Length: 229
Image (tube, rainbow, N blue to C red):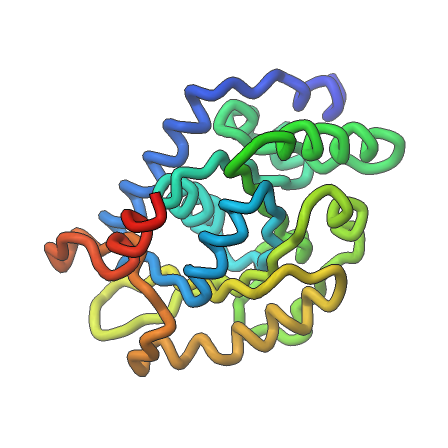
């Protein structure tokens, strides 16, 4: 059975909700929290309407972190990834992953993303590197196909990294920019270059999910999100 047929199972709402809650639990349990620069801008953007997120791709954790952020912000989240990945891992389809297919089938992928984004508080994540690469690699090597989707909704550049502080596990750190229509790779590269400032205590990085390892009861990010709801 080909990739087109095997990846077109409908996505309900239950399992994507489970995936978001699972992401929040995994981040709080196994990482040094989730910290976001540009959080206020991100909250404003998703309040205004659906958005695309264009991010670098570091590790398996990226999808977990995207789901966890959606849970924290009360968003519907979809990840867009290569159809081959879903053929190998069909359970991902039910968790809310949309297949990115090539050739004539690409129009179906564009249509499915557009249909998903036809609603409030919805975000679709793209990782245009197409594979996992260390956040230190330059150039990042973004593929240009993401431009086919940027006409659907405003697209936000996001840098994603996992730096260590003074504990044995890394933190998940995002730096979110304002909407762009081009130049995503340059913008994400700039944001990756300054994520080292998080380790130095830059207050722009707001804690959205606290690490249970530190027995913290929420941070300033939790208070900001509460005020926004």
